[in-house]
Image 1 (tube, rainbow, N blue to C red):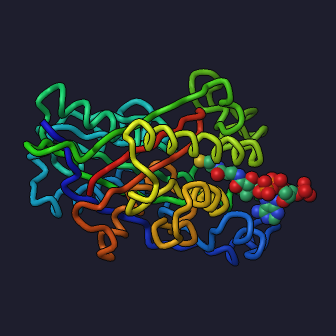
Image 2 (spheres, rainbow, N blue to C red):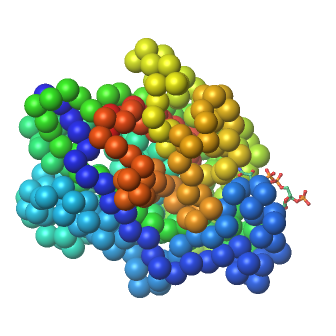
Image 3 (cartoon, helix red, strand yellow):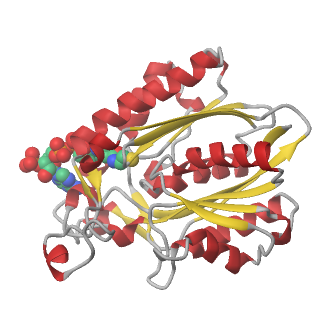
Amino acid sequence: MGTEILSVAHYVPSNVLTNFDFEKIVETSDEWITERTGIKERRIAEPEVATSDLAKEAGLRAIKKAGLKSEDIDAIIVATATPDTYVVSTACHVQYKIGAKNAFAFDLWAACPGFIYGLKVAKGLIKSSGVKNVLLVGAETLTRFLDWEDRATCVLFGDGAGAVIVSNSDKKDKIIDVFLGADGSLKDLLIMPAGGTLTPFSPEVYEKRECFIKMKGREVFKNAVLRMQEAVDIILERNNIKPERIDYFVPHQANIRIIEALRERLRMPKEKVYVNIDRYGNTSAASIPIALSEMEEKGVLKKGNLVLLAAFGAGFTWGSALIEW
Ligand code: COA
């Protein structure tokens, strides 16, 4: 039995925060942010909007595009690092909101590569347990967990959601391969230290700003380039595919300089590498499905295209995937 992506869709909040807006919030400039990251603007969810609301919109669009109904969904996986609630998964919030009453539902926490981790899990579920249609959503409201006084992190992230329907098929496997990696020994380089069982929320925690995302940018940058290169090399080598055969490379959108480093290593022309970081910033687990959805909407992605995905994030976690569109 094979697996395939039946449809892809995305949803981002309408509220735009530009680099110029940031100049009024922290000591920064459009020039600094653009030069170091490639980001020009990002989307910010309204206060009453939760991660599941973004996921719901993207999910319903993906279900409709696939020609399915909510009742046809057997499993919902929400890849997110910014859940609605800690007890009750975001996936259960989504299941209720879209009326997918026949689906089991759970969250997958793997930070920015969460969507790639989700592809591996969705494929495994279909192959091993008779599941037919999986709604896989990458959804984040990261801006809720940012320290708006820390200019080195608050300018980097944005909110959004992207969703795919992964289904069984009687043809060859179109989710050709997924490679995953992790290294928990480097966890402190990119972490929200408090808010979990290790260090619950308290006024002291807030005072120390530990309930917000903290990052050692330089070290994260170096590790991101190394690990994503490794993930790309491994998946191409073990599938005996030369980079020239890839039609599109869709990297996690964290920093234009990381993307450029990977592009040069793969010796890929610019037109084969999808970039939208300028408009959304880093939307973590949502970044790759948002990119795929935009490519599909623009008619860039065509049936039969060979697509390479790669991502890196907190944990550290990383991964790559090869898909036939
Ligand atoms: N505006 C202006 N100056 C800023 C700034 C901002 N928004 N953020 C940091 N700076 C300053 C720093 O305070 C520092 O000043 P100093 O030299 O006076 O101390 C200077 O810029 C250089 O800081 P540094 O952190 O060394 O810059 P950098 O070149 O490494 O760029 C990042 C910072 C965050 C853009 C970069 O490290 C990065 O993108 N890292 C990876 C982040 C990432 O992808 N994370 C997610 C992975 S999924």
